[in-house]
Image 1 (cartoon, rainbow, N blue to C red):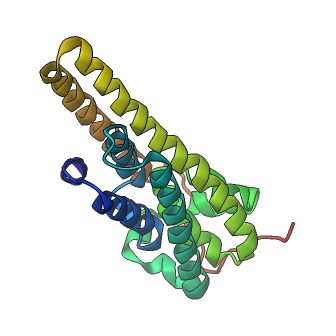
Image 2 (tube, one colour):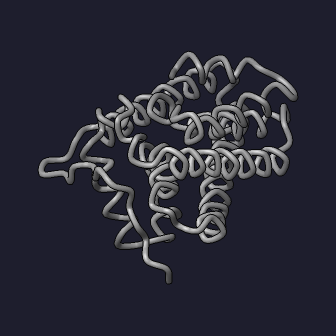
Length: 220
């Protein structure tokens, strides 16, 4: 994860848009979120926008589109494969989390799509589980896009303001000291992200086991 973040910081121009979009898209579409939380790439992209290496508004638009399209692919995977999806190794390793997500879908319906956007592991799980539940796609899409806008814009702007703070710090204490501070802050961010991702991956005691049949969400 640290190597991916460091590689992003060395890039320039359109390649940044492409890599950030690919990582955000793959999080739910290819279940890449089990390995690399998408918000890490978005924060790094925001930092690069503060350095004028990419356009901030364009980056936000690309992030939102990539998140929405990736989740739509995840939804389609869940709709097509249903219960068979639960036999995938990644799903079996997170049985308690899968059960909790299924219960959240039953209780909250489409709102669970929005809520799931803000938890690392749920972003990878939720679209496929919602597709398996046969929730109507238009309803899923509305809440998915809303979550993508809030999440994508929020983390991108967070990275942007972090980058702006670096430039201001460099003016007062010198660029060498600012780089040291930035490295420490980046390391702390990566460690925090990894620990949070691992905590969310651990089965909770008494967690609900995955269902053998597809979930059914009542029409509202």
